[in-house]
Image (cartoon, rainbow, N blue to C red; front, side, top):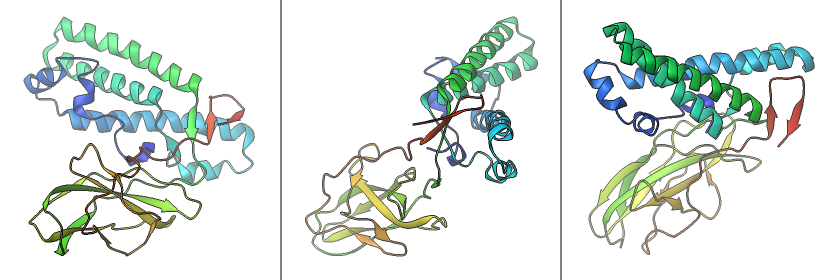
Amino acid sequence: MLLTDGNPNETTDLAVYETDILNVAAVESIDLNQKLTLATLEISEDVLDVLLDHTWIVDPLPNARRTTGVSDVVVSQQMQRWHALHTLAIVYRDAFNNQLNDRYRVKWQEYELLAQDGRAKTLKFGIGLVANPIPEAETPVVGSVSGNGVGGTFYAQVTWVSATGQEGAPSVASAMTLEPLNNLTVQAVNPPAIATGFNVYAGASADATTLQNASALAIGATFTMPDSGLVAGTPVGTGQAAQYFVTGGSLLRRG
């Protein structure tokens, strides 16, 4: 996924690092989604600072980076970890300021140090960039038409595809329950300028959708599930892979 597609982590992801975080947030009336978004904003600003330093050295048109911002930045595993740790530092900072509880202060300082390590590892690995970023697709519109389908509950996701075959991050899954003799329909909405088509992924579970179309569908087209049902295509991916990496110095290394 791209850094501008949304938060690299969800609230449940934070529990991987801190088991009690959901309870702490509830007790202290801290909105974890707001803190995740704040952490994304602060990390985005930090990443942009690094990219601006880089372009100042090697880019004859540094103002292009100011226009692009971080829209071409790919979230790596290192950056995802950085984001989670930075979010936890923000949460425990707020919890400490609410209660002046030394236990919260220790947690805040601990995660602040871990977040700094996460940042360092992100920059050491490199900030991944793509030449032509494709944003995450919006949740598709699902419906049904008369047919010979067996019915059931289905989940559908879509991705935008560019003229060069690059594929963006998948949308949130949309669910539809069908009666027998009805077939699922899926429409992608609000295409970005770079998109020339879209892919449809569907399945009986939101966590196990697979590609349903043999080639990218035209923008504005409607996918209709055949009477034979869903096909076991390629599992849905996570979006574009980085093509270039910025390590914070004056050199780009190709990925």
